[in-house]
Amino acid sequence: MRHFMEKDGEMFAEDVALSEIAAKVGTPVYVYSAATFSRHYDVFAKGFEGTDALIAYSVKANSNLAILTLLGKRGAGADVVSGGELTRALRAGISPDKIVFSGVGKTREEMHLALNAGIFQFNVESAAELDALSDTAATMNMRAPIAFRVNPDVAAGGHEKISTGKKENKFGIAWEDAPSLYARAASLPGIKIQGVDVHIGSQITQLDPYARTIEKIGGLIKTLRADGHTIETFDLGGGLGIPYGDGGQQPPPPADYAAMVLEATKDLDVRLVFEPGRMIAGNSGVLLSRVIYTKPGETRNFLIVDAAMNDLIRPALYGAYHDVEPVKSGANATVSYDIVGPICESGDTFAVQRDLPKLAADELVVFHSAGAYGAVQSSQYNTRPLVPEVLVSGDKYEIIRKRPNYDEMLSSETIPDFI
Ligand SMILES: *Cc1c(COP(=O)(O)O)cnc(C)c1O
Image (cartoon, rainbow, N blue to C red; front, side, top):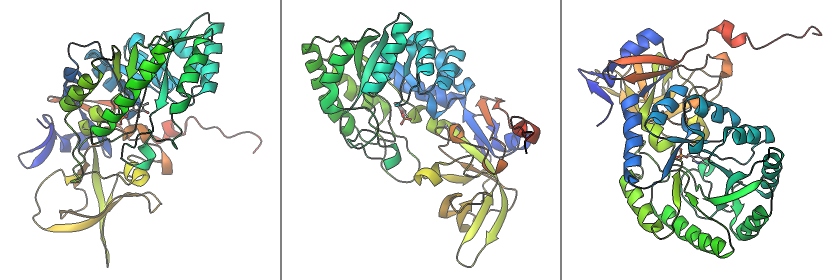
């Protein structure tokens, strides 16, 4: 069931008309459906029902405290990539024993914070990081539980900026270095080896790259065990894609993914860990925006909306496609629009030559599939207020991140006396 849909000629988020949110909160604004977040998490979790799998939601996809709290209450853990995300996850009530810490550049301060909290696992990405982690843990009289993020050198498809499992990516340790790095880890005072980790990319729409990864890692796990290491966890990362409505490749249903993974790992005797982000958050939110002007041109018709690349950077950054739809259906005539924001950059373009029902100033449009990597990547570029977020549940809704006013935006800046 879809939770962003048309009723009586206008689009709703669950039982709340988007036009009502626009009137009360203003635009641009992210609108999330609690029911959709829950459903996506539940669908994923159901695939691994009856196993001890840890589903560590990838906080970077959408890190709002309300969202983390909602998912945490359903049983989700958290995959964090910074001290800030760790703090969010803990504040949302997610138990430290369900938190994994990923990322190539963890600082000693962040390691200290995570060790203090007692997180489940550090996913280590280099020899230098391993040494720093061991040092930090040893001075705290602790052993940090680790998995190495191994680069399986598998092409996963998707955009080059989000592909991570190839040799030439900055992520993970090289396949050939794994045995020697595990041996080194075993010799360090502040380290406890507990598993293996991979994350091969994002917006993956086929099962095959996962299957090949599992096969390779399965072999590695046997080698590592033969070398005397204890390997209890296998973290498969995230990356499962979602439909963006562009007619592109359809991602496999989460149930098929789960069935494939369970079958392929059944003899490995490991606790599985997953880090899904986009799959849970992506289609749980839309960006609601208002048309400021229409600007007919000689060769192009511009639709100038009040959302911009600082609110949703995916089209500018990744060339990403977002389905765009008017909130109120009405016009029968179709116009080919270039949909752009007000920012002083040509890159501030959401879509080029997109066919939409004819729109006029003040009408509302939504950008679909904006729940993941949307609000989290927003900025105040052009001194535009940070875009607010609203969570809908049934006929209720609440602002879960408010729009700052200009005084608030400027309050953290100071003018030195020496000027
Ligand atoms: C971004 C990221 C994820 C989540 O990826 P999705 O494509 O959103 O599922 C999981 N693990 C790591 C290490 C990541 O960097």
